[in-house]
Length: 293
Image 1 (tube, rainbow, N blue to C red):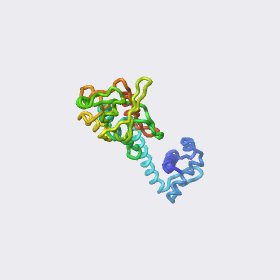
Image 2 (image 1 turned 180 degrees about the horizontal axis):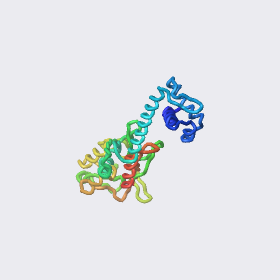
Image 3 (image 1 turned 120 degrees about the horizontal axis):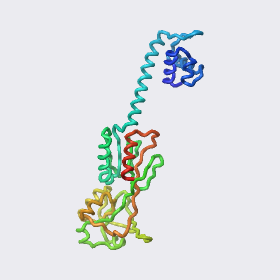
Image 4 (image 1 turned 90 degrees about the vertical axis):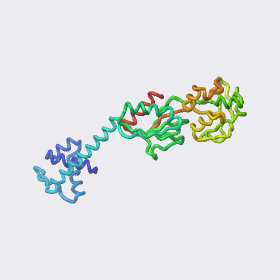
């Protein structure tokens, strides 16, 4: 039998002085109420109640034990109230992970806004381009880029990321501006390691699709490094709009092949399947989906 339930039954038997009254309160049979008391006595190896046909009275040990039971049950109730308060009010530490570029450029400004609205929440942001195991690494919520393969997670879609093809004016002055996707074969196309060694860039215009096998003298596993390489005139880069749009707007980079589209990148915000998510987790997910969904 559950020890805490047995304690609660025992305390109410002492307070009400009747097995039948406690049976009604707990929706148990009178026999089951008696069994709870006997279970405690068996675990303790002593009698807690002296039973007569008319009444029950506490033994000396029972009188001490019932007070300790009240203390234990009071502590459990207090713990439950604390847990419920944490679920009701966003507070505490929220651990978030996101891809490096998306997190630094798109997520951080929104986290600042979220923390103004919910000042009792402390956010720990882990920027990483690998897929992080939420349970193993103690992460509350993650932003995932690309096809989602996480049947054990709850996912909500965010606005997809547009991919842009860019190069610096200095690079284009030296090597010329590609007019068609096929022209990129003659250019130094910088590689993103997570996409693989023999990656193709796929361009679409209306019903027309072209796949271009790209090669280059520089590869990196970090989008920010590729942005710096492009700004330095090393070559042509394909990355998400969130990373490149500011440099394009300022003229530091030039968008190439604007009539052609690259496949968008799926973006999701995901969390584990907690039946009752905390207020900080629930509020953060809703906040991000409202602004980026």
